Length: 390
Image (cartoon, rainbow, N blue to C red; front, top):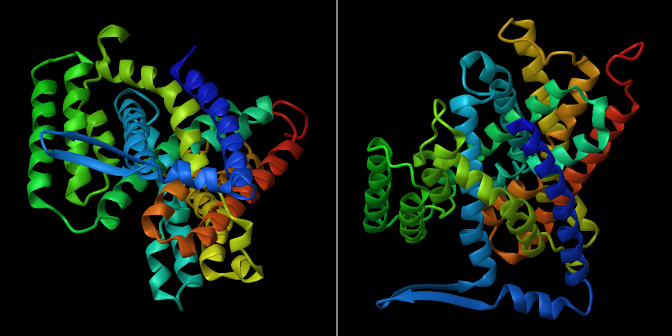
């Protein structure tokens, strides 16, 4: 199987488990299990060594620690595609690149327009900017041969670039007070990994050990700790001219991807997707935060991506995906509004206070669900490729 096909299959299965985890979180939050659920998330956990240590509730270990592993795999996917995949040349990267930019800009504009009268909510502008690979690919898998393979690759490449954009946004816009000492130590660790790479060290273990050190330093620095996962992935060597076994990047990605898809992402969804119905009212559905996120995901993503693809094609910047009709392209553009994991993650950074958490989650779930159902409906009603009228 090609790497693309393996990735698509793994992500589609992970998307189903992710959905089940989100449903379980909702059930726990609104049943007699709620105290046990909250107690689980608030469970203190710490690590100390020689007087220095880190102690946080389990929820923060999931969001700051396990999600760094998620971002390590995301970083590996990005580097692999940039070096030897669908983004390895300007011609290949042009279509998903322009589409990703449109899909990040328009949702932000819609969100800020809706929340123009509430400047304290402007910090959430990036919540509807990213696409959830697992859920989007899961929907495409349900559609089978109705969607050309070129469109599946397009969606995967666009979602990967979306993730890259989200990583940059997190690093630049969601950074608290900086500790220069911790940043300097993190920089020393990154430099050590770069030296290992340039020296031809092809064992993954040294990079991962230093990566843990970098993560701890970044955690203390004020920059969000998950950025350390991406930096570590970018330092891992990827050899395109040697045997696959000689690539630490591929070994790490292949080893961690199942744990991320079937373990870390569902656990993150379980910890962050629970909405307490007692906290919701009619005003919650019309709250500008809810509307900004939901409409940004549903309308903003499809408008931004579709305009970018149609405009770029009309200007001759790139060709549309091979064998795909414009209605099929539009259906996939709608699916890019499935934000979920990355949207929830950015939302927890933008609004750490609990009093806005319900509205943020409601907007993410509403926009993502509407995009999934509408996109699936469009693609399901279109004729299969090769049929008359397609």
